[in-house]
Length: 249
Ligand SMILES: C[S@@+](CC[C@H](N)C(=O)[O-])C[C@H]1O[C@@H](n2cnc3c(N)ncnc32)[C@H](O)[C@@H]1O
Image 1 (cartoon, rainbow, N blue to C red):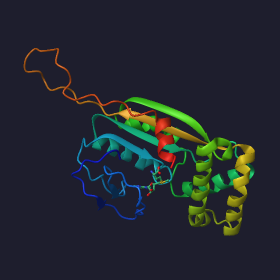
Image 2 (image 1 turned 135 degrees about the vertical axis):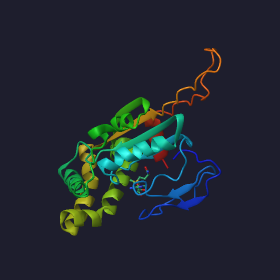
Image 3 (image 1 turned 120 degrees about the horizontal axis):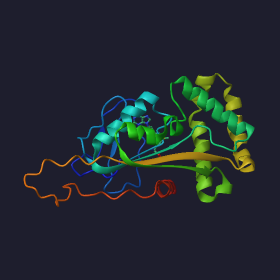
Image 4 (image 1 turned 90 degrees about the vertical axis):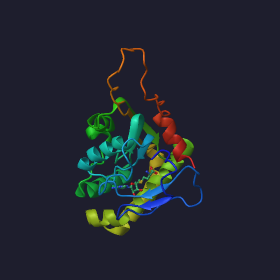
């Protein structure tokens, strides 16, 4: 969540049932990690704390009603004039072969059974959620990233990520759909070649929005040339560049 000020401790646990999966080897000096379930408790930061807040790939963790609350909560901890950036992927991709399509159908069915909407990028849309939270100057972008060797380094990483996601979802999908575990695992293996043949891709949604600058207090003297007391905060980098940079390891 952007850069945290030094007054926050190095590590905090403020929520339950979240896995403590943090980097252990490469940790920037201005970075702190926090284990927190945003649905169960408000973020443990005062109002107006951060210049920039980034949230990515929560689509499989949040229900539609959670989304409205979460974006409002991100808005609360952002400084007036600061920026929020959301990046999500849809739950089915495109140019799928039959096996890849089958996997996404199983995953979507499983998540739907848990009340999760995998199409939050379009229903209602990240920009719509930002509008509901009162953000302004919202910019929304939709782009496809290839899955597989046909997409170069990014495509190769995305394919690895996708395969790892399906494997990690094994117990959840088996429980959610009742399918045979061997069939599920065989489908994952076979899909690895299929995405290259069909040139599959994923659709990503990104949105940036700015928190309103509070209205100026009443002027004490009729000096209408005075500028805003809040320094303008420059817009973040293009969402596309931010995504690429943070996914190339
Ligand atoms: C697909 S991972 C994305 C991780 C990281 N944001 C990224 O883009 O690489 C989904 C993350 O959402 C987190 N998550 C899911 N539900 C959450 C909740 N209610 N509160 C906080 N984090 C949650 C999970 O712990 C997991 O780390």
